Length: 55
Image (cartoon, rainbow, N blue to C red):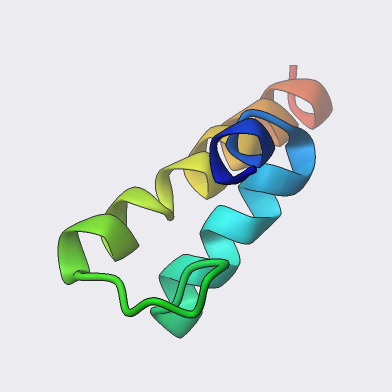
């Protein structure tokens, strides 16, 4: 289930939540590398919003 959710819009929210809290869906602790990787979707979505509103 974890892989299937990761490629959906709700997966982006789950990745950002995991990056902030430090726990994934199974409440397993994430290392700093995985937490930093979880923030990348946020930057991609902010870039998309910027392109929509400021183009």
